[in-house]
Length: 170
Image (cartoon, rainbow, N blue to C red; front, side, top):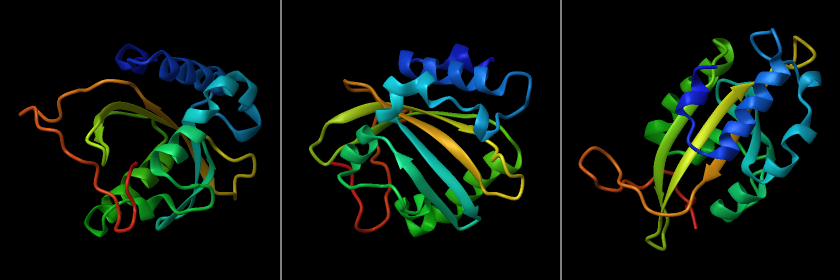
């Protein structure tokens, strides 16, 4: 898996290896191949998002680290609601693309908290097919926040993550 070479955090690397073992020789693992016990000590960093429609992607599971960072319980909420109206369609399209064209995604970016603290963040997203082909396809997402500071864009400025009105990261 070429992606492994780009992954920086040990926890993300362990998650990627687990997904790789779940899929075996298949392009994408089916739900029954996912063995949560393989990532039990990473669950506080993991969320499972079920793609219901092109406008609805619900958190089926949200790890405690993500919920604590957001300051709310995310389970049952629509993932697409956590962006600005201007970015919502692009986020929905990217997320649905991960399911329609099975692929992994890897993001590295700083999150600027309201306290002024900046946390470098690495996120991996992997698709998992449902056992029932007619079911919705959940995407498993690993959220991993490291400690410390990191520059933002190429100009070194930190840019806050845009969230929908009423949501903020604590």
